[in-house]
Amino acid sequence: MIAAEEITIEELADLHPSDYILVDIRDEISFQYGTIPGARRIPDLIQQALSKELEKNMSYVLFCMHGIQSRDAAEILRDAGYDCVSLKGGYGQWVLSSCQSPSEEKQQEVELSIRKKFHKQLFTPFAKAINTYDLLKPGDRVAVCISGGKDSMLMAKLFQELSRHRKFEFELVFLVMDPGYSELNRMVIEKNARMLGVPVTIFESEIFDIVYEIEKSPCYLCARMRRGYLYSQAKKLGCNKIALGHHYDDVIETILMGMLYGGQIQTMMPKLHSTNFEGMELIRPMYLIREKDIMHWRDYNQLHFIQCACHFTDTCSSCREDGVSVSKRMETKKLIEQLKKTNPYVEGNIFRSVENVNLSTIIAYKQAGIVHRFTDTYDKESGAFSGENAERDTPEGE
Image (cartoon, rainbow, N blue to C red):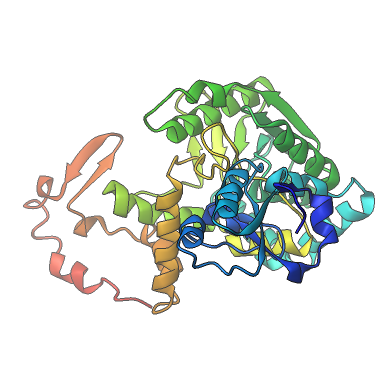
């Protein structure tokens, strides 16, 4: 290894992969979202180093999002006697250096992959969601909201593909809000947009600075504020809808998290009327697309995207529409994966559970803020319906 505390991406490329172990020290969601090829994630890295459990005859290169946390971690490992350096600039700098220059050939390759290889996995469920949930109507002007990640960038390309097959007239505006990204993140978003042929309109806000001083639920507040800013800017641009890139896995995780952590049955709706911006509507056209297929498309085309990086953490994965913490979302993901081992239909069953709600077997439910209890109509319905029959209709699983 080189005699320094940091190593550049260029210097790393000159080393043989067998000479070092590349370690991604970010959280598990960030690692699964995207990492440097060949990198591994070692849980409890510092603890293993301090307890001498790590292999000593190997060199280690650590990286985080911007090379800040990894620099501190590398120093701890060196003090414990390990040959260890930090990757300068971290994953963000690597993503930027890996972004391909704009070319008509690359753009055509990406678009062809959507039409051919991934048509069934991506475009078909995209179009199905739009038709099933009536997400687009003639004359709509849609603000396609792009955060810079894999989901929203793919959504932009799917909308472009849909416009080639349009059965009626609608307009698209590709809207990017910069809530206070680092210069590197902003550059990655702009470079990817140019490379993919997405003509983005960028506007700035100070949301990250505003929520930085908030102690309680800053991520939830950040998510709500971002949606408000998007509605406001979209309306200024003459749009009547904003499109967000939530996918099928987001939906089923939200359903399960609502039950486990919120004590309620609810889902992430495919479309919503805005309560604060008259005439505006939110749509989720990727509602039926699986995350694994999005990741496959990304990797097949050798694309690299960022996650939201705010002032609170070096890599913040929790700035989502629902404001749920990284740990809760990861726990839910792992739970679903565990359940799939014994029931391969569990994901579909979770999704359908909010489509097959039998109100006759519900203790209480809310509608427009009003609580309705089964006791309200229990005696009135005694002669017309047998609750025992309803219980017999409850499926035990596919």
